[in-house]
Image (cartoon, rainbow, N blue to C red; front, side):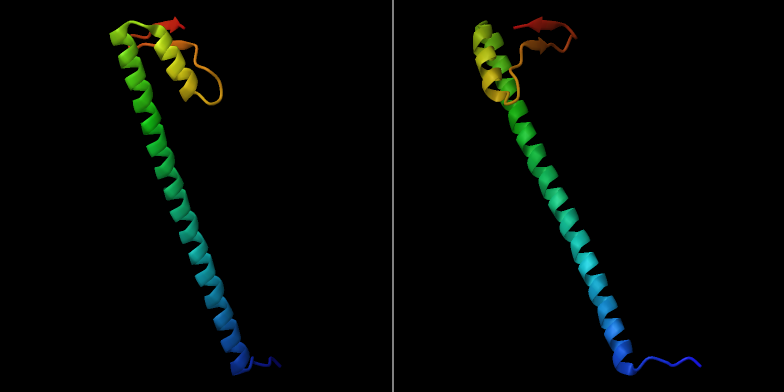
Length: 95
């Protein structure tokens, strides 16, 4: 003989299942939102750094003083100083 669950137990299980589903959906939404926010912030920071380096390269080439570029790239590089430039033509020049 199988005994059916009481109406109170059925409602409790349904409420628990709905709560788990809602919390999972909220967790996924929060994760995706945070991921998008981080990617957007990193992309903006990389674009800013790229523009700063491009301006440094352009001004250094206009003036003809490679030391300005060396200082700017050392300031911009947090992990290790950059000691070479790769030109669009594919040539590499050591600083």
